[in-house]
Amino acid sequence: MPQAVLQFRDVLKRYGDYTAVDRLSFELAAGEFFTLLGPSGCGKTTTLRLVAGLEDPDDGDILLNGAPIAAPRRGILVPPDKRQMGMVFQSYAIWPHMTVFENVAFPLRVRGEANDVLKKKVVDALELVGLGGLHERGATSLSGGQQQRVALARALAYTPTILLLDEPLSNLDAKLREQMRFELRALQRRLNLTVLYVTHDQTEAMTLSDRIAVMRQGKIEQLGNAVEIYERPASAFVGDFLGRTVVLEGAVKKIDQQLALQFRDGERLIVGENHNGKFSDGDSIRVVCRPEDVRILPDGPVDATEIKARVHEVAYLGDHLEYTVDACGRSIVVLAGKTERYAPGAAIRLVFDPARLTLLQVES
Ligand SMILES: Nc1ncnc2c1ncn2[C@@H]1O[C@H](COP(=O)(O)OP(=O)(O)OP(=O)(O)O)[C@@H](O)[C@H]1O
Ligand SMILES: [Mg+2]
Picture 1 (spheres, protein in one colour):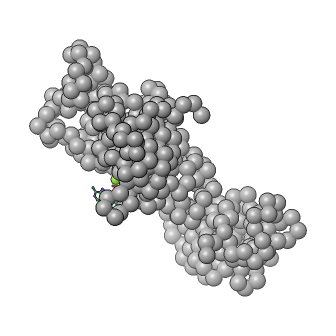
Picture 2 (cartoon, helix red, strand yellow):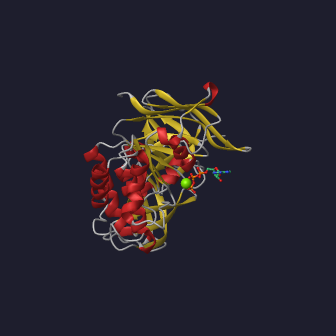
Picture 3 (cartoon, protein in one colour):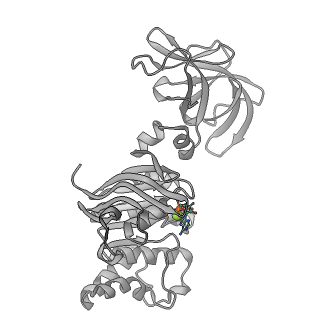
């Protein structure tokens, strides 16, 4: 990796007794779109505010292009205006008494930008976010989505070292959000922006990011690209958070070169190869995959990668069907095409592809 633009080293932030950011470490490369993804309260906004200098860490180091900007042990705290960050806040914080143009221009005026340069930057940024015709509008007369785009234009016009975006699309309707997502990604690529993005929306994270850090209680639970974290979740928390998952539980049973999952009733399913010695006979494990990775077959003799199941419920979702089925003593949701019809109560088989299964040791 080239020199990191931003480095977090064991960064700690407490509010009273509460640890909001818990010895967090990660690096952001130049031109990277990096997303912090996690549930409400996991410390995403706090992390962004630490980068911007709006909060000071209690311990650890934050480095920008290799130089410390916050290192409490060494008494270093670079003030926000010296960090050159552009931030779009979760509440987008635009100034109601100013026009759209003045909102975007304000940080540039503070920076002492020459008038002609400033004008061009503001006009370009507003064009980029699709607000070209609204320069003179009062900020309060805009819709929530438009205000959010003003905030984005303001951050862009500032040409920041790192663009910090806190749920910047959350107030847009579904269609506009999708369009803005696409445009934001294109813009980031074109301008080679380094972006630290915050969201709790997994689709947004997966479609925008080069890398995603899944956060939980102030820590990173898993760091990787979208495919890695979706298909190989490091924990049940990550798997659940990223979308619906099929979970099977049982004990490990080694059979020659293969690893089987043995259920309580003695039924077995081949779940992988037994080559890395990670599991021993009798270990409790959890096997995780995606609903779309399980296939349904009509009743019949089961082979080693299949289990017996019974349809409990069927939901028609337009382009596909969602089956809730009972198998191995639990309820599982699987997806199927519209041509595969089974009525509630029907006996079926579920087919698992061992290559698409993730095996996790059950924490005791
Ligand atoms: N100024 C503060 N004083 C006390 N506690 C705070 C303060 N700011 C944040 N917290 C707490 O720290 C934790 C992390 O907050 P943070 O705003 O970083 O979460 P978040 O991941 O951005 O959540 P959301 O998705 O809801 O925006 C929360 O439990 C929050 O209540
Ligand atoms: Mg937040």
